[in-house]
Length: 499
Image (cartoon, rainbow, N blue to C red; front, side, top):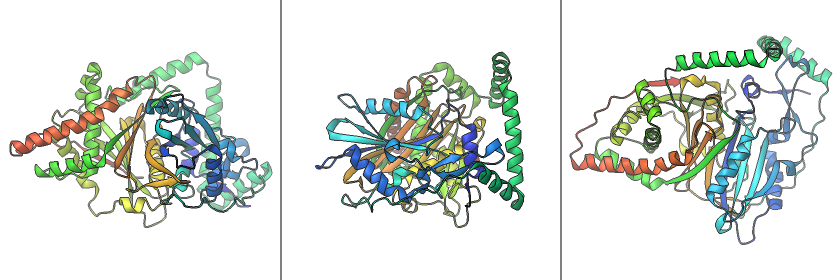
């Protein structure tokens, strides 16, 4: 039986994951139940009949004896969909704040590696008869090519779409140790580059064994020295770079797309040729500046560095094969957010100058193309962006911002209309904040994820988004009234990291 082996990238996500940095990519979607209602049994039936579209979600990771090669995907012979699709409820009054707190706890827990690497939660008890579906998948699972995110396949454009035919899946028998080793050795002999993986795996095993005999005191000293060296290399006192704890905070918020479109019109009246994406990045910049200003010492230190860098994964057209297993071309653009600029119009202009060089040949994948991926692309595209972020050295950027367009019409899950959807982007070691944005049906839905201890006032940062919208509108109108004299700032440097 041919082995479906994890790619080097997927395997690396398993190797680098820790209890403090679980690589769980998630989606929090809020629904309005139909008159007929919606319950756990209905969700389980829907998932069971749609799993054929995501076969990887019935497979688990199987390690090779002695760790001589990368693990393989095998069918879970004990697969039980009811184990993965779980049920919870909020206490009255079922507020969004209560939902956010529950999501933070769910995303803080690592997934069980002895089972398929995903979970889904039906959260009942929201106000106004609403409920939420929270999906949680490991980054190694969602590569956009062999596996989409499961939250994509439960959504339909029409409320009365059938769930699908009865499930007829039968798992293949689990391979034994001899078969796993034999297949790995054969692959190593027939593919010269595979031998490098075996060598790397052996070195990793030796290093792990050596580390296990190092006592705690020596390890603590080593960690302290490493932290000092890292900070020296960083050249920044960014509050978003810190050692991660095991717990998270999550905050969801909304901005109407019409507000962003109006800001685009107002920007162009004063000679700033901004797109909605430029407007969004400028709003993120304004919110970060406002939040940092409430932490005087951190704000001063950040301004002194003259740099606050965001990693902005961008989906590109993929005419050929995907050599890195990312499921499409995803380039990571490192953009310096101009938080040292006081005037919101200047900040917007500086971002426009950077972003304008990213699309010289109209190669970006448009919203229409993205949402054709299994009908709803944002969940998978956010996962791909998170995968890119996880592969880069954390010293190169301060913040991950994934912005994925979704369909501008209603979607349904078994007759229940989805009224909002928020991405949950995992934190990588050393990064204490991530920002995920999805536009859907006239609204920009924003999910903020932070380390619970490093950022204790995430709600303050969230409030800064609406303040940033108001501030930008005021600045653009003021500039228009005085005759649009131009901008005073100089564009910061742009760095591009290809996938």
